[in-house]
Image 1 (cartoon, helix red, strand yellow):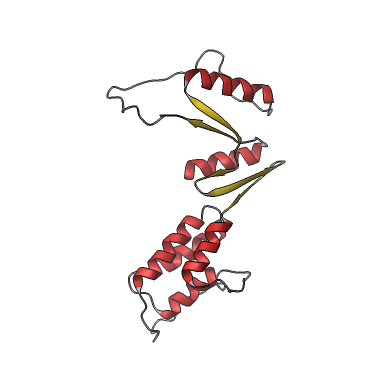
Image 2 (cartoon, helix red, strand yellow):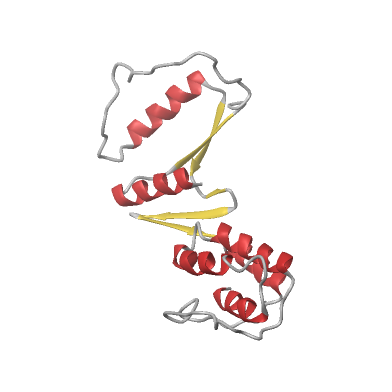
Amino acid sequence: METARVIIALAAQNGWRLHHLDVKSIFLNGELEEKVFVKQPKGFIHRVTETSEEYISNFKQTMMKQFEMSDLGLLTSYLGIKVEQTGDVIRLKKKNYVLWLFEQSGMQECNSVSMPLEARFKFSEGSKSQPIDSTKFSSIIESLRYLIHTRPDITYYVGYLSRYMEAPTTEHLAALNRIL
């Protein structure tokens, strides 16, 4: 997932268009036992700065000669993430996942907030909050960790609440619901 994010960021930064190729049986080959050293092939261009359709087409044709694969065109989704490419902007969206998460959490009718948690938010030390089911709390935390790939703004808050997965309370759940 991290590699995909880096590639998408580089594409957005350089104005590249992302294409989707499906290589058939790519993972059926076993791992090599010997060390393999690779050098760039003759004709390798280190940095192509223009987004030439001719380069892309040539690359696809070369790959299709080497591997059984399908050209699926411009990338529109991967791993359940919708990808929108317009100009030099690439947007990643998980709207259906968020709606599913709201439903699982019983928060279909929730109101949006501008900040996931208040600035310098801290839980009270000697809180008398009631304990809650850690399984449900942990499940929501893990779901939010997956959502972080398209919502980096909630990363800190999800990490902060992750500290309380062993013994969450109603106070922790209220903060978690605010992030949702």
